[in-house]
Image (tube, rainbow, N blue to C red):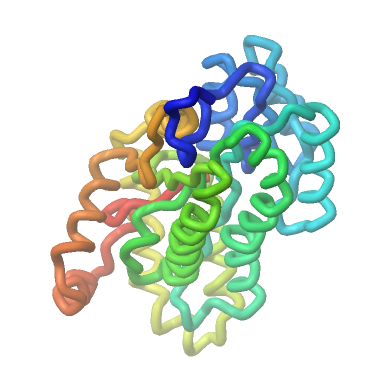
Length: 305
């Protein structure tokens, strides 16, 4: 680092410092891993199944991508990922992109304790586990943590309460980490993508179906019509979204390479819109907007892993 560089700003990446991307099997994580490799990074793509990793390697063009089996909800798996980085990249890790996540969509009355724990374990607890495990390596490079959230970390909409709770928590965790790690030079940025058509939409529909199936019959019937309409509208509007996986990948690359990284990067018009509305509209006005037919998740921006 030059003598005049601000001590709290990380250095620029160098080729021997890799980037680790979690949740890279499909969707935005896959796009991000392939894009970063194309930009010159050595990439470790975190996947849960070997066949997904082999497919990624086959799709890579530069020979700088490898995969690691990572389940962020399994402490042994998280520890193994840190051991791999230490063994294969002793000079340190430049970037950790915390993209792995799930989306539980259901009326909160239908979200049982196991489902809520799964949501929080994957999107919050597992993310912090990855950060703890890789911080020693990140400190050596004065590297960067990029946490993927969404507009639902700002506004909680009907039927996405469990997911919004996880996103609010991840936003708060990112703010605290950024302040705690400032003196060590490790930067923390948040990327908030708008709705993007990825495989998460079919997964969300499956989770929604399970939530109604396992809820008490009387409770499920209270929500069935409006909730089913909400899920169907989500899938249709995501297909019409103008925000692309390529835009998301480009934004993550900026968070990893900007000389003065922002605290937050927003991807897509809807991502900007939700942040503006969340700041200027009173809670009761938002409540009135959500009364009757609930808006879709796209109206309020969500990430798509």
